[in-house]
Length: 257
Image (cartoon, rainbow, N blue to C red; front, side, top):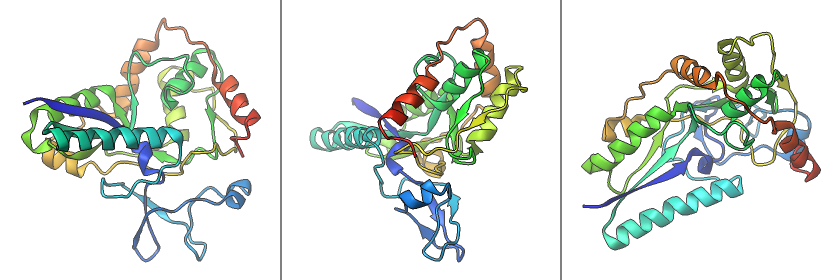
């Protein structure tokens, strides 16, 4: 029987799942404009305590923080609805931050790793919003391919929604430093802008337990190996650095704080 796999996104979660000081799980929280203007980047409870980010499962309700997130959520839900209505075995895979060879290097919206690579290829420092300590899950394109194959083949996947990530978390600053080192440009330190970009969230990384149990998904590419392969592919590549131009456009439209 035919099966439909839709490429959904972790962006529809908005902020990830958090834990309070008394170990209660909390979702749907956001940072205030006053807080962001004060460069107080972390999410806090009503008493001012910093919330602890924890892996985000599929059960977390969506918090649509951008037009992109809204579009991805609509696409996901439409595919699942059509699947139920027409008896098509539909599966939604919520991809986290995907990277790998043959990523577009001159498109500033293609992904943070591609942006960092583009800057470093031009001997410029990677630009990082906020303080660089926001946490994300970076997953190799090879593991994305693995997940897509499993979603097509595993009978129990039908009608399901699955997080596809690495199951690991890294700060954006650490990521910039790591790729610079692998590229042999560890002397180029990232530039921390101290600015907030409208629509950005603080922390979100994947709980991949459901995909492991149902799909048999097993991430096979570590960040270390993935970066090494990416950098090998980067040799001889040329990138038109448009990151500063994109940042200037965001600022001109009032989309940075």
